[in-house]
Image (tube, rainbow, N blue to C red; front, side):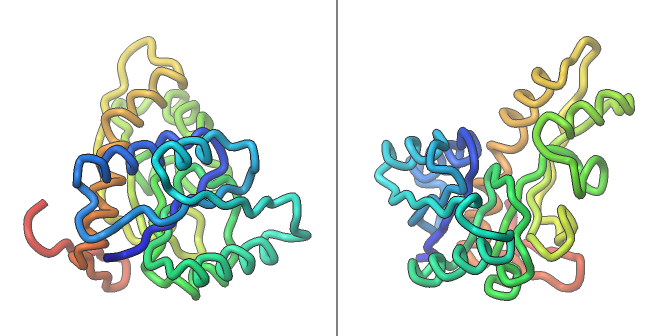
Length: 210
């Protein structure tokens, strides 16, 4: 059984999607073992408490750099015997120590169809603002492995979401979460925990049907 840690900084809506998937028995081969927040006041910690998942705080403000915070995170993850790390609204750049400690074992969900609207500076509502300003007709979400490049790791799953006339960034954000993020993130976590993902270069192969 793969022990999963979810890293958060805010409300934890994607964490809730994972909690709900686990309650439905859909996280095959894995269990949510820890929620680690970069902020003590993150509502995601309350979601973890209600679900009976141990919560921890490694606050960015207590460290002099992203590197020292990353080192503390790695130490905590190893202490907890974590096998998969999931970034779910974690708003800090992790340095290479994390990727070295968990090669092809860190997942991130991004609210766009990578390689569009991704990379440094593309997070939260900014992604949807850029998509609307560009005039694309379809957006979506991507779950990918994390490497040293922001949003640059091998892609596991993607799901498209239509853009409608009159969409605001807030409306689009909600639709992308409901129709894409909350579906493909638990699915990708389960595939990992079942040992059904293999990576060669940029290509992720999924064993069996999904």
